[in-house]
Image (cartoon, rainbow, N blue to C red; front, side, top):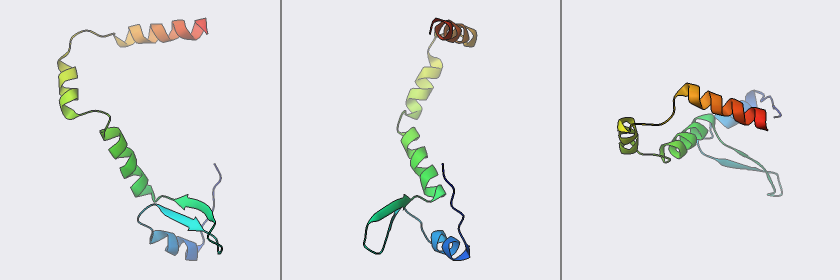
Length: 83
């Protein structure tokens, strides 16, 4: 990943951005898209939250069976050695 260092003027401009924002040149050509960190974290949270419900988590806690952590590790070791 490349890092750009913002001077005071750019930093002040970027601080005003609260939503995903297209950055364009004088001709209107897209140079990039800026997503503020707080907004990106919220988008990620919403995406993960949508993968399961609290009811599903509660139900899974009550289920019996499955594999122990040691069984999972052993299976992964076997797969790693086979590959």
